Length: 299
Image 1: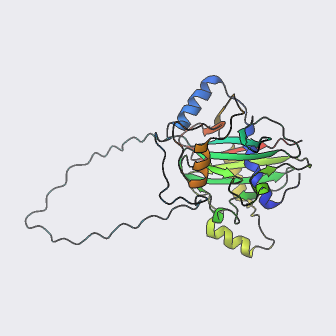
Image 2: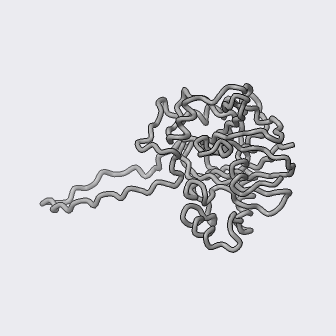
Image 3: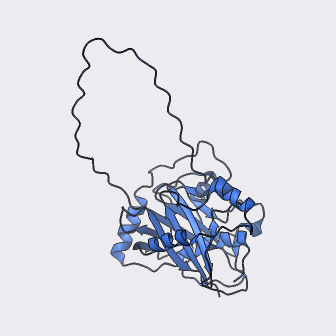
């Protein structure tokens, strides 16, 4: 299978929708755990833009406290603090994905992730996370060396920071030309293995944002960036951690207005909005990085 770098960056996420269906009890637990952090009402973006910024927001500096005169008399004894640390119920991190295909009328409709695609088929992916974090996508072709295809210096200013339940659309339905709004399968077959990484913290040793832009500007040969042996070994190690998944049973419904607005205006999805077709979550809240590998079905 032969794809250009930019085109292939738009295809790979669709392959993660090929996960196996878990037992019914596990499905209910995973779906409920993922959706519980969705707000009841939509989270509006105060500065809506055509495409949400995928760079991590800079922290606002705290104001410098004003100096006050010391009170007269003895210094009061502060109350005794409980040394027992408070328990924190940390949620498990997860990602939700919905695969859309273009129907004969040009509408985006949900399609079964196990569908085998052929030449001329068009697809688009909607991705949602249940917490803030960083998304990375790596690819190997015919068991070759890995390359990073997201973040991309040509997309989102090389940012890869996702806010909880604010979806990411790949490719964007707002692209200037119709041909760029969909991934179009060509006539070439091949074995494409995809490594999908979502982490609550930026991966050490992996350039993003300005670092990635600078690397690609100065790199010889040029991008895509290729992970060093030790970086790839850490990702492979995380791949061994167990995941729980939930896959929907029904398809064919068109993309909703709420989903379209959320992706193009940076609005968080609410509990009443459509649910992802596939949900994957780490098995333990102590795991802060989710890694999965899947193949793209293209005949």
